[in-house]
Structure formats: C-alpha cells, structure tokens
Image (cartoon, rainbow, N blue to C red; front, top):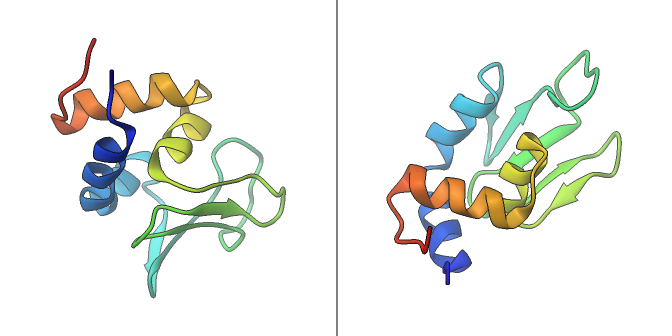
Amino acid sequence: MLDFEAVNTAAIAALPVLLRRWLPQGEIQGCEYVALNPTRRDSRPGSFKINMRTGVWSDFATGDAGGDVISLAAYLARCSQSEAAHNLARMLGVAHDR
C-alpha cells in the first residue's frame, strides 16, 4: 500500500520544481506560489495560491482548495487522489505498490 504521508513529504521537498513544471507562469511571493489557475479561464494571477511550506492550496475565486500536494496534483491533472499519489511517487522515487 502506498504511504501517502511519505509521498507528500517528498513532494514538499520538491515543491518548487513541481510548481515550476505544473504552473510555469507562476511566481514565488513570500512563502506562497501564485499562479494562474489552468483549470479555468483565469486572466490574472492572485487568487490561486499554494503554500510552499505546507502544500496547502486554494483558488480564492472559486473556493477550490486542498490540504496537500497530492490533492493539488489531483486537481491539476483532474484525476483521483490515489492516481495522483501513485504518479507523484513514481516521479519522486518514493516506493509504491504499482
């Protein structure tokens, strides 16, 4: 069984790289990464933010939010959290059962 906590820990460590890959137009502002939300017609950055220390994220314009990097990956890829966790585990070299 996949250890979601281990995947999230590895993802937090790699978060700057992951965010540049997933949201290349974003920028770091303090401890947050601010970007356009690619899941909707977002015309200006400011409402879609990811905390770089915790992985907690929110789109304050829509109310979409999550508590970790796995939920962010699932949201951006429009897949289940389980699938996102397995994809992240593979990408980050975290042992997993698939």
